Image 1 (cartoon, rainbow, N blue to C red):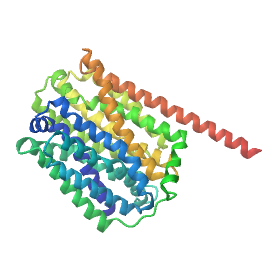
Image 2 (spheres, one colour):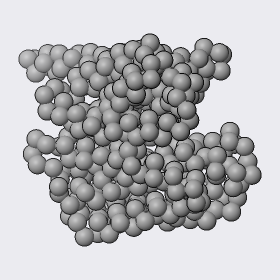
Image 3 (spheres, one colour):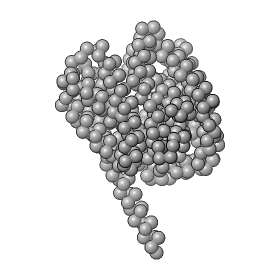
Image 4 (cartoon, rainbow, N blue to C red):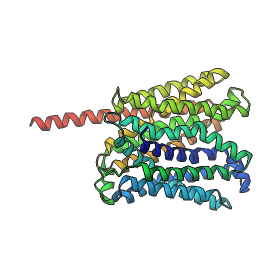
Length: 392
């Protein structure tokens, strides 16, 4: 593996670890700060908000920097505030540190995706981006279960010290392995934000927000689905999470392979169709102890098969401001995280059962398909208009 790509994957591992490990140790954190679990859930929201806010702002400020310097600076910021999180003394200090630790998340992934595409061999850009995202998926497979175990059996702060160590390793890797890469950005803070004038870019952001929200609608309630619906004990949930993580790892590379056979928009649409099918099917199979685990693997794989093609889609749409466009997609993922969990929780609160979350997820993924078709139609109309102008 290209060592520079490996350094990006290590960074992705650290980001995935800090984003998802909090969900496994949330009761322990709540107990440490003497707050309720719902109140402790604000720590998750604070991180998501930090990603949304930080992605465009930090990417914009880094517009004059070479990518390697920008990535190192972002990872130093990430490392400092995640390490400090381990020493938080109360609810408000931890809440603030979670927000600050999240600010570089979207910018790192956004800039990193552009860099990964440039580092890969010609025609293999999708594989390069998939390698970077593999760090995030491996974090779900190995890092989060380990961090959760250490956090529960020793102290919750160990989980964030782990993130700090991974951050330091990333900085070292970027320093010695990452070459200096010039970007195609126009080079000023103001010019970067010209990308917001493009309708297609906004539609892709909406597609990411709603379409991937379908995955989070399912993933947010996977624990009660495994216990209350399938009938497993709570001790089985970590193993189910590992199965889902394994699916994410494999699905990530499958999505990259699909982009070599189909167009980016076609690949995204096909994945969303498959996601709708799997989520609906899961509502009928979740009561079976064997089939629910099979579907956990499949949904994890399908959901992360969209990561690379949709990231490449927005990079190509944001030509001239690729780093900003790419980072905005990370904001969209996190909005999808919050909206998927929220909307899926509504029918559950109304008493429709935990499988109702899958119906909500399927509906959100279906809306993503509609948006993808809309983008396709707009592109065809644009091509026709350009053809008519050229003939004149």
